[in-house]
Image (cartoon, rainbow, N blue to C red; front, top):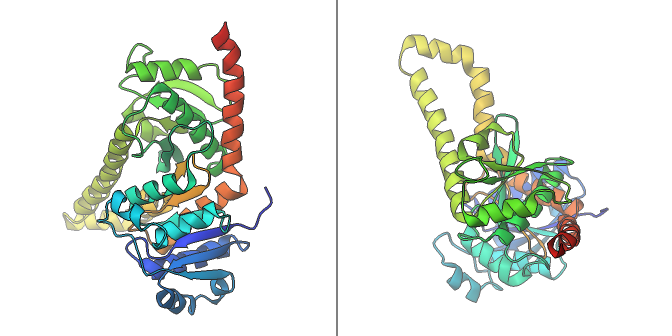
Length: 346
């Protein structure tokens, strides 16, 4: 898909507001010179930051909004003023065709509610899913759902698998990603009815993926599986546990190296390796969760992300736009349904 991507940015989202958002746009524009932006938020604050980023300013449109979504806002409250908020206007730009994708570091629940209401789910998808990249021993893996749907049936899980595989092919550059369902064991007899039914539907599916069955939580970090599929309840717990474990490891190492003069010397000698470890575990390097299954692309950045982290989220949006992810998902679903129909009839 040859396109000059236009990214709608909620400039008021996240902890850093316009300063981080526009610094991120500057980084992203250096990586992808064909990008242009639409910034939504307080015009005076946005213009002040753009004055320090002339290259971005030449490729930017500012749309003023007095309303911003706070981290404490409930989705029901946000929906009543969605069209006036910077977050809601960014998503509306995608719906109206003024932008190819929207990026926000704001309230996750509010963004999900606004995106679902504004863009609706694409044909063939019952529920959208939140997908993100997780660091592993090998590189990165895709995991979904991470909190959008606390309860899922087998059909939802199959759709998540299809969408996750399309996402992995786009962002990770994999031709045939390995896909597995998260379970309490790898044996076929273990797990809920929904997991067993989803596995049966995915085995032998004519899709650009390799379904490898079930995987357990302790296998996620190994990186042997490219796409881990689960419901939003389990996925969110697994994500938060992984993030907490990463912080634990970094903190324990830091404390250990400060414990004596000898360990301080060891720290100096180990600094390059520790820097690489910290970089691999840094959430900014894996930033950019995506609401898959909508009629439009919406990317969620960490609220505390640095400019580099938000730039990575913009990069994810760029990749999904240029790869035409929505068309890919629709095509994969159509192929899956076409080949499954004769088998179901037998």
